[in-house]
Length: 121
Ligand SMILES: [Cu+2]
Image 1 (cartoon, rainbow, N blue to C red):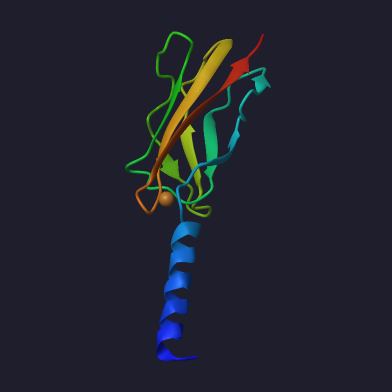
Image 2: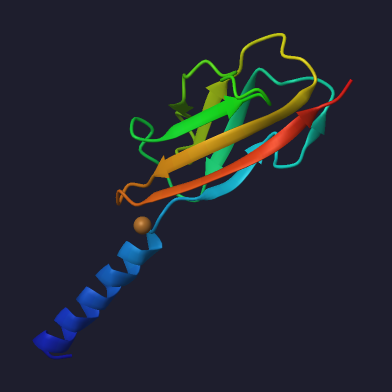
């Protein structure tokens, strides 16, 4: 391999690695989208496809009236870098709750989404 084609191969590899680090989006959550639960958990957990910059990202949970029902304490898991958690206020009643998230990936690309789950009597 000539020096030039070795360089081209290295650049191609770099480009592939960069695109592999593309935007981070929601992989799965607990409770999951559309879940119907008997009681609200203490916290919600979201697994993203790539680790996110927690300080620049937001996750909010709101009730049907639009009131924020989380403790605004978004944090990354120490062992699992793609996992973030958010504590919820206690004693929330039946109803539909919506989680909205804006995730800033390590490459600074931003992705957004929302999902909801329901508490039934
Ligand atoms: Cu990206």
